[in-house]
Length: 368
Figure 1 (cartoon, rainbow, N blue to C red):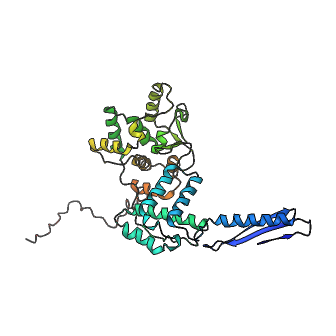
Figure 2: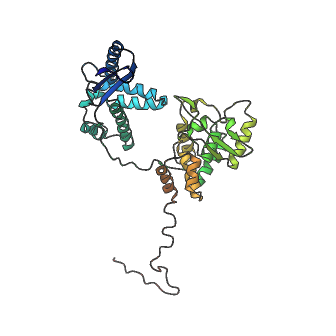
Figure 3: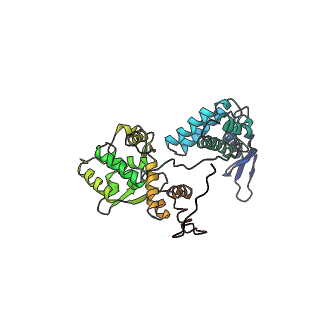
């Protein structure tokens, strides 16, 4: 810390440097071009206050886990994340890690976190355990980046997680599904048709407006999404807009709905059950009533992808149409459609196992 006269131009410079009491990372603030020694002394005192305040450490030098949660939530809000994402993080952390609330954050060990995931949450699915660990890692990463902690104690744990897609509809099942929904004039028929012919996500379907529909060129622009906590948002999950070509059945449906729209800007019907997130429940009830697999609503998207791949569509094109950026996810659909192994054994023939023409095959004697 200090101040001094700069001989070249007769001005003064003041500075202050200190180490974070927890992370030991140094921080220096400096101000040049001061006009007098008195001003340099005053600025030095201001820099001391700013540096110490930047560490945001209580007088005791200890940050409790509960206080870290408060700081972390504030940082998530400042990053302009969706309310749904923030709620997921904070609800999970408060539910599963409340036993640490009064603890200093530096006292929480890697083994404790491992025990929480592997022992206390042993009855949870691997995918749920993985999410809890992800949220804990995010919290402690923030602590390290904020100089509140020297290292992230979160362990690396491998989880055995199977395919994300539990079940999909085959093309024949999808045909029965849509024909029955049309026959019964089901309220959700328009939504299901667009979902299974375009692979659009639930939020993308809900936010679809007529200005995104080009009936002349047979295209749909997907550029927004929706969820029940945040409402509509002009951004897809992948962060990129995409164009989807209309199948003939979708065009017929949309032409009819356009004539009946009466100035309504939304393409698909507005229903309370959809607004409150009951789309999976409604779908499963209907599928069960007609004897088809009770898939999730999101698996209509998976069904669309596997049907296209099964018909010979290029994986890269399906990936682009569906708005996937993760090749790993696309590989799951390839396996479901059998594309990655198709033809491997079609010409695998070691010997001729067919009976010879005219030969009488002896029967194996009975052991009785």
